[in-house]
Length: 142
Image (tube, rainbow, N blue to C red):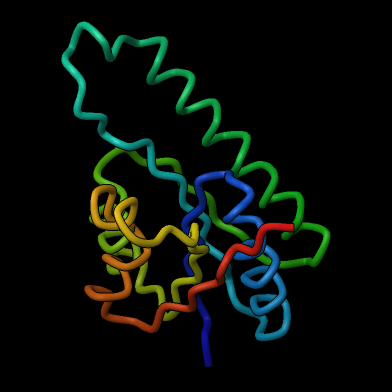
């Protein structure tokens, strides 16, 4: 059914449930799990965005990918990881197309109201524009 799944992650608690679902589904189906961390192009002036900020974001991304790699390895799931830079929803959609992914699994942060209107939702943008199915996994506060 699904052979190449894409799991975009930001390393947050909200994405942890999506990781669990994606790894479990990939294990069940024998699918390859592509895990993507996007270093967001930040809309700051060049003076504010120095090499140390970008390096820190890449470090966070590497740590997030490593945590998923460990979890997938424990479940014997084949994994491909990527760390890319760009606009998150655009980068996710391009990666899914380039790698011919047939399912995207994403967490939601549960924003609503003004926060969602002002900040937008990467997940919502991906759901609206993806050519393949998107499984959204809602984050629940404990």
